[in-house]
Amino acid sequence: MTIPREQIEFDVLFVGGGPASLAGAIHLMKLAKSKGIDLEVALIEKGADIGSHALSGAVLNPIALKELIPNYRESGCPIETDVRADEFYLLTRTRHYRIPSVPKSMHNKGFHIISLSKFVSWLGRVAEGLGVNVFPGFAGKEVLYGHDESTVIGVRTGDKGVGKDNAPKANFEPGIDIVAKVTVFGEGPRGSLLQAISKKLRIFEGKMPQVFETGIKEVIQLAETTYFSDSRGNDIHTFGHPLGFNTHGGGFIYEMNDNRVSLGLVVGLSYQDPMLDLYQEFIRFKRHPFISKLIKGGRVIEHGARTIVTGGYYTMPKLVVDGGLFVGASASMLNAPGLKGIHASMKSGMLAAEGIVEAFSEGDFTQETLSSYDQLFEESWLKKELYMGRNFTQAVSKKGIAKFLHIAAQYLTGGRGIIDKMTIQGDSRTLRCLKDDHLHRTRTYEKQAYDGVLFVDKLTGVYLSKTQHREDQPCHLVVRDPSLCINECFDTYRCPCTRFCPGNVYELEIDDKTQEKRLRLNPSNCLHCKTCEIKDPYRNITWICPEGGDGPGYTVV
Ligand code: SF4
Image 1 (spheres, rainbow, N blue to C red):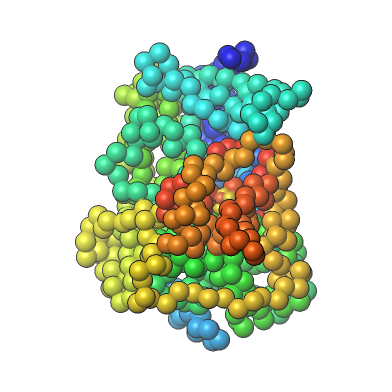
Image 2 (spheres, rainbow, N blue to C red):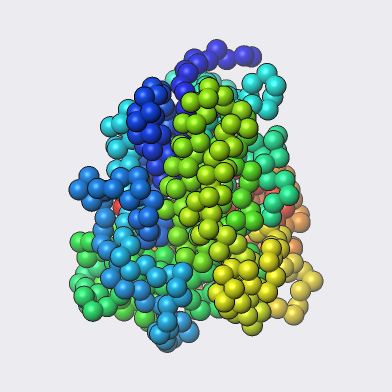
């Protein structure tokens, strides 16, 4: 049955309400106005509000923000604190050692500690003030193509009010076809529409696979501030415990205002041990004596999880197709050695905006004309920054001494290192099989005691993310072959989805009497981090966008 759909036309459509799209939309409105070009611009965001799905470290390098809104402080930009100094620690199981010299790429003095959720919400208001039509609660579900099947002409938003059985309910609202001369995709890491475009237009052909880290993060209200003072750094990074040296990642603690800290652990999804449990690692990080002393007496006020795209320059897709541009994290815009992506995402959106203005000046929206975005990127500080870190994630994914040799060589050679264009495996391919591997030890975890205040269990964490999904809708996590989970994955990897999902969405049930196994899904717990689609060793899980407005409700993380 063909569903009649409303069609709305704009000049430019931004898909995704993160820093890339919002900075792009703001820059576009300003540039167009300065050149006397009148544009109708729209921006759609799947979260219920702009900022409700935004979660990041987050230390902001203000380089792009200064270009976008030079008087950002006076304009009400929500900054928690400024970075006074950086501290970098090696954690062993019970001790901590301050590293006297912080790597140059991680020098953040003068940068801003922000809540990404609040920052993005502010950018949304600035964009609206400039005339951008901002539509939160609308998920881009399908890419629309022209008659040639290769020109992007817009996006269809998801239907609302569809039942579990895929049948329309009484409150059914069909999705809208939003068509535009130019569509900018800024969906964030592992964008669903980007995956669809990639299959059709092969934008990742010849590139290395995009690789990811998953970060679990909390904002903690401290009882008293005993650690931070004017003489101490308020931007703290750690490595070592609990991940060790063969699994890359590390922890962070940033001082926020009102006696709060933002604390998190990031784990590289190239890890090999199928028994590794992301949430348990996060709890082990919090329980380290150095960290637990710092947060003692505190209370978790918000919790969330998100993936970060870390592969960098060599994993970037083609940035332009006919009628479409790719910006931000979905296009691998992140400075991996500096652990920062917000400024890179913003700048990519701004460069795309400059390319779009040129295309409107010429009245042509083909790949050829829009490619000025590509050229602008090549000439920008952003390219220089990303190119410096082009082999970094490949190096940190190495094991033992090789890791440190590669990193040192890259620091000495401006990113080239021992091998330039180091290869990397996709994250779904790195798990070791348990059944024929008796050489390696797998992780085990002690039973944790949760107080429900400072140490919360996974389900309380889900509650504190304020995630919600309408129950009666098709499951947005599609397990292609459930029998594979039980018949093959259990023996080989012990169903790692039950451990890499930070939202307790996947549960393995084993019948006491018959020993029959069943994988149960709780999709309403989903934090939209997409770890499952990335790490599943059989590529058996597909994350599809649920109804617009569903998902986390972040306000301060
Ligand atoms: Fe993340 Fe997938 Fe779990 Fe949702 S189901 S929280 S996307 S790992």
